[in-house]
Structure formats: C-alpha cells, structure tokens
Image (cartoon, rainbow, N blue to C red; front, side):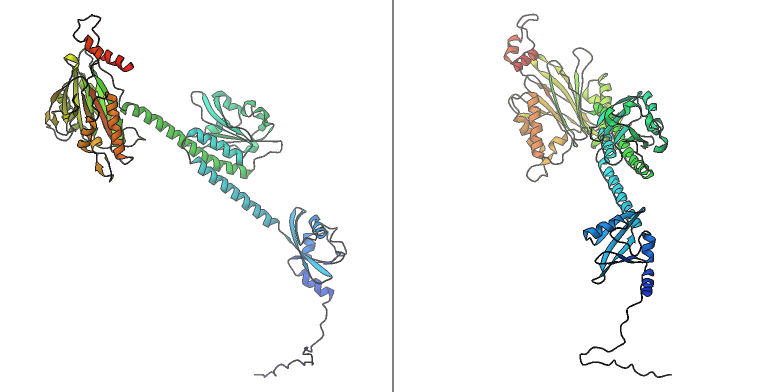
Length: 575
C-alpha cells in the first residue's frame, strides 16, 4: 500500500493572508458554456445602460428575438421593458402565445441578470384549478339550496336563479305538459322571476325542447340554431340570442322537465365544459323538482284522506245542543285514534245517535281504524239505534277483521227529546271512561253505565243506562287522553278524574261551547306544552229555558205565545 505524504500547510504572511495560486477570471467561452448548460433562461445585462451582454441557450429558445448588444428595455417581451422602466424586480407577460415570468438579480455593481421561465402550463393549471373550484362551489351551493325545500314553486325559482348566476344570461324551466298546458318559470339577468303557462303545441317551436321533455339526451349547443328561438321564449329587450342550450331535468322514473339556457351576443358559445356542468346541475335540479312534485301529490292525497277522518261538523238536532272538541297527539297530523261522530235519524222524531271512542294507538294506523269504525257505526245506525246492540255488533265486526290485535273503547248514546224541554239520553259503554253529568245545582255525577273492552273477546258485558237532562244540564263524553294528560309541577302527574270533575263543576251556568272550551284550556295549561295523547270531548246539553220560552210553554199550538224554546234561546243569545 503506497503511503502519501500529508498535505503541506499553505504558507502564511504576517498579515495572516493565505498564499496560493492567483485567481484567474473565467474565459467568456467558459462562462457561456456554464450558462448554456443551465435549464433556466438567463439574460446578462449591464447595470447602467441595460445592454444585453449574454443570452444563454434557454433564453434564446424562450425569446428568440433577444440578442447580445440589444437594449433590454427595447426588446420583447413588453413586460420586460416595463419592468426595467419602473425598476420592478419581477414581471409576468404574454409573448408569442406563452406566459413568461422574469425576476431580476444583481450580480455586481456593473451587471445584473434576468432569470426567465415559461409559466404557461403553471398558469393554465392554476386557472383550471380556480375554474374547478368555482364549479364545485356552484354545485355545492345548488345542492344545498335545492334540498332546502320541498315546495315545488320554490325549487323552480331556485333553479333559474342558480342557472342565471353561474351558467347563462337567461334560464327557463319548462315542466311536462298536463292537460295540454306546460308550466314555465323564467329569469333573465337583472330581472325578476316570471311564471306562466304554455300551450303544448308551442313546445315544438323551441329547438330541442320536445326531445328534452321526452327524456332524450341533450343535443349539443353547437347543433342548435339560436336564430330559430321564438319571440315568446325571452323578453323583447334580451337582444340577439348567440347560444342556446336545452337540457332535460331527470326525475323519478320520468323527466321532471327541461332547462333552457340562453346567452346573448353574436360571439356567445357554450363550451363542452359548460355543457357538462349544466348536465350535472340539471340532474340535481331535476331530482329536487321531482321530489317536490311527489311531496305535493302526497300532501294532496293526505289532505283528501284526512278530510274523511277528521271529526265532522256537528249537526244541531231540534232541542239539543252538541259541542265537540278534538286535539290530536301530533298537531301536524291533525288525526289520531280518538274520535266522535253524530248520526241523525232519517225518520222524523227518531233518535239521534252520538258516539265517542278511542282506538288503540296513535297516528295514521289508528286513524284508519277509526274511519272503519265510524263507517260501521253509521251503517248500523240506519237499522239499529239501541246503544248496547250497536256495541255488541261492532265487537263481532272487529273480531272478524284481519288485524285482531286492534281494539277500541267507546260510548254510544241515543238522544231523544222529552217533555218540558228535557233531553233523554240512552247510554252504553264498552270499556270507556264513564260520561259525567253536570246538573243544574252544580253537582257532577257519573252516568250509570258499565261495559267491557271492544274487539278483544267474543262475549262482552254491556250494562246500559238512561239519564234525563233538565234544561241547562250537560252530559260530557270524553276520552282517557283528557284524564291521563301529564303535567303539573313535576310534569308527570296525571290530570285525573278528580280535577276533571272540579273543572266541569266550575262550568256551572256556562253555555255548552264555553264549558267545553274551558275544560280544554284547563287541560292544556296543565300539560303546558308537554307530550300528551289524543283528546276528544263531546258535550250533550239540554238548552236552558229562557224567559221568552217560559212565556210560550204550555200555550196552545198556533197561539202567538207558543214559541219554541230553542228559538227563544237563540234570540236571547243574539240580544
């Protein structure tokens, strides 16, 4: 192994400067070779007069018109000259279809260099990124606003508002024709949303509209002749239509409509990216419009069904007052398992049948069974007015139904007029809270009736009873949702029969409707906004005899003093 002598330390002078070989400035050829080897474009300039001394190979390729000996302040690109004139350290300018960025770096007191690079692709990618972010933001806003409502007209207005703010100068949504009429919603930049109806035969006048409404894929904008747009499609002051785009709005198994976009100006176009963005937006708008239309159909259907399930408007038989009150457990649904109904006799002088019941459960399922029971009782009332017999037949009908786990409690009464303004009420109950009677002296008593649950066992026990109501007396039929309403100081205490009796007693001397409203308000205050069950009340009252009716009592028929007690009371109320 060859031994090498250790390196010799350089000689030093007294001033501690190292003695070494003399520094030789690189030759111009070597300097050019070094700069040409750089991938970055470099221009070497003098500091005083900005003359170009050296242009490396990368700079010559980027800016072919730059040559040594020329003034940098005169040559391309114009941004370089402006930067030198303004003393700027950087510039970005377009030259020969490319974006050139330059930065200035001093070298010594007599020279400086411009470092240049082609940033065309970088700027293009940044612009594409900004465009994509804008599109993503637009679609996010569209999804948020379109999903915020199930109101169809609001969805239509939101669709044209979003389209005009991001896609076109004018937007119009056309719904499929119904009864030879199409509903449309339109918005133009700077205008107000307009709505109207369009005859079906006019749809063919708009290029591509019939195909879009039929669900066919959209026709590219370049294939649609914007000059064929009918005058009625857009306002007169819109101007020349330069570009037209018609896109279907996909719905639930069928098109929800079509979106018509227009841009004004002779140079207006819809690019392929615009058309793709429009198709994505149309898919979201179509889904929202279709969902809103389906919701509207369901609401209309529900309203029709609810109309037959809601408590009826009570008739007022001669000589009897009937007052009803109903509160569903869920106010938004308005229907539930509690119900009441009145069936008037088709025969003159026949008994009027009243019924109040409580079906097992809450909500739509209980309401459906309620409707069936009401219809069954209505049919029974045509052939039978005896409350006990009606309850037994209803029990057999419920046991024969497919859903035998459903049961009901109810009370049925048959009303007839007696002498001296009295009202007779034959009652029968099936597992229901016993009706309460408010007498003229302010006392409250229970009706003498008992009975077992309906719809559970084949053989039930029904013990009917009869009560007579003197003028001014009231019989209150109610559901257990009233006595079981929880509230009070703890929020869990039931209202109870005791409080109900006291509440009814406090209604002594009140008209029937005022008494029912007072009890309803007292229970509502007890619950104070808490969770409650369905509550139904039906009051049967013998009208109080007024002074005018007493004068006519016992007068011969046809006598000027023979005045019907009910008419006399009504006149007294008017006064």
